[in-house]
Length: 101
Image (cartoon, rainbow, N blue to C red; front, side):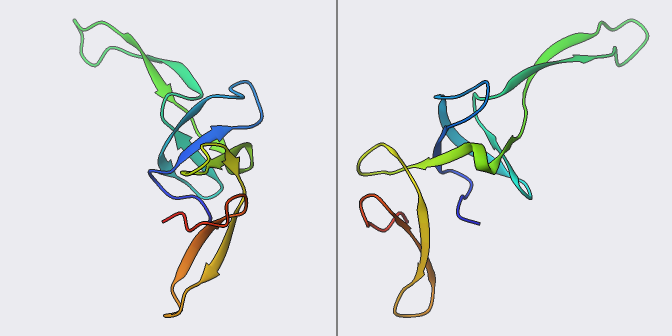
């Protein structure tokens, strides 16, 4: 997977196109981005005298609809995976050819 928790991404497709945020959770082929794709969820009362409530929840977005923001240029970029001298995977920005992390 080329995206990790904590990465800054921009949404490139869908109703939330153009919004930016950090990844809070990575699922199989979806990501949850903070402040993006927020929906309202209605909750029932928890006890007999309680009241229900409406809370805002961040819903997952498909991974193909987000793109990593390059830390140097601050623009969306594709990511390629390469190996360093020790055989450890590193992520590289295709626009600036710089190491991401």
